[in-house]
Length: 236
Image 1 (tube, rainbow, N blue to C red):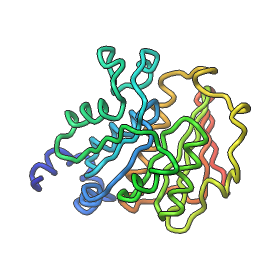
Image 2 (spheres, helix red, strand yellow):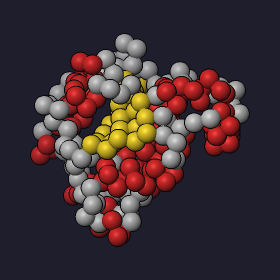
Image 3 (tube, one colour):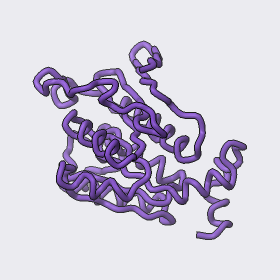
Image 4 (cartoon, rainbow, N blue to C red):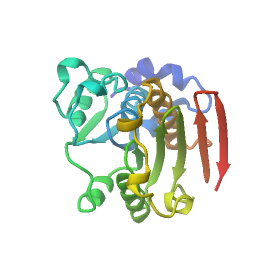
């Protein structure tokens, strides 16, 4: 990719003094893995793709279903039944053909997590269950990878950065996952499609800042209620 192509595509963000040429080079050289190509993963993937992150991995074994479409905006009705990771890759390549995208059509497990995560610099967790979240966290700790964490429920969302340059990880905040029977989820409780869009965009924003060494969350948990627009940041 030439310097001219870089400038033509990314000049509006490169004009920011905090970014410039050096920040764009950092984005180009970065390798980011997104776990989950669903409600959170779709906006995360769109924005890090269009910002010029050089290598992006997508992990999702699931298939697109009709009820996904109100919030998983990378997909269309004629793609129902197709794998999310591969379909997302195809769409993202049309948004930015100048980057590398790798799709992993498999479920993340304790057997393959280290192999998949080890080649990426930053891990973004857009999963929807605590088993995967703790597996991703523990693998990031073992491999020394930065983890961008987000979750949604109802009208509320959470955002944090774990294991970055010696900061705390998910188990420092919540030592053990809750009993799955006690945890509500979108399948049973519903979600307004714009909420994962907002939280996913915040996760993408924080990811880009981390890549460019800009100020980021440090042992802080952001709690964001979109019903009454309350925004709380807790230290841990």
